[in-house]
Image (cartoon, rainbow, N blue to C red):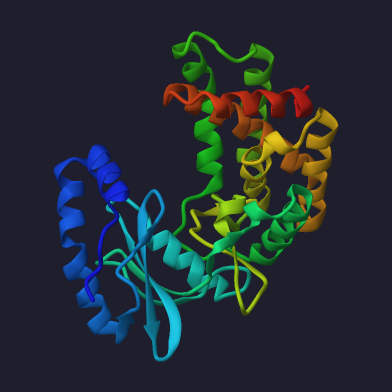
Length: 296
């Protein structure tokens, strides 16, 4: 059975990456066949699932269902593999095989049709918080450092604000800049899933819920909070609801409340500017609501 690349995924990749993206798409069937032979895997469907940066091919390995994940060029496969090996299935999808040269992973199969996006917001927030707690372990060597990320944010927020004709109230940019500098000076050294939103937590069999697609970084687990705040913020109707949501995640994850609030403020300003720079309209509005509820 040959792997088939969904047209929508292929078109999006070619728009982003041009000829390099087209060559990657054209190489998928041969790459998948080569990996299946190497790992003794049999594809069970030619219909791939996909995210922004990867294809997922349903397969079977030694009688067990699994997923063959093919990552597009530029995806940090090394960091993902490093994180998944460190977690070893605790709170995250289990890695079975990896080929860094091919940008390929063989993963246990989760239920792609059931994510935390389908649960009530506050129930989902508590489950996500518990996963943050499980995923908080000492960071393995070789990962990007949160202190460097925080330093860069502190140094660039004001120039980015000025380049966009100052769309954000200056007091919020100033507060976020100061907080980012403080967070850089006090960054920890735990393994952090820096892309933990409700759609990246799927139903499993070993555990009820497991995280997928980590963007791994060494730092503070509080960095995992902001995306959980803004991805379903429309369901938190009032400023009080927003503060309760933050408290629910923080409590379930056993995090430092002040640091979780600080990272949410910093990333809300950062993401607001990023969204405007990339032509998004809904995300800046959500960031405005977050800052209204949480910033001074």
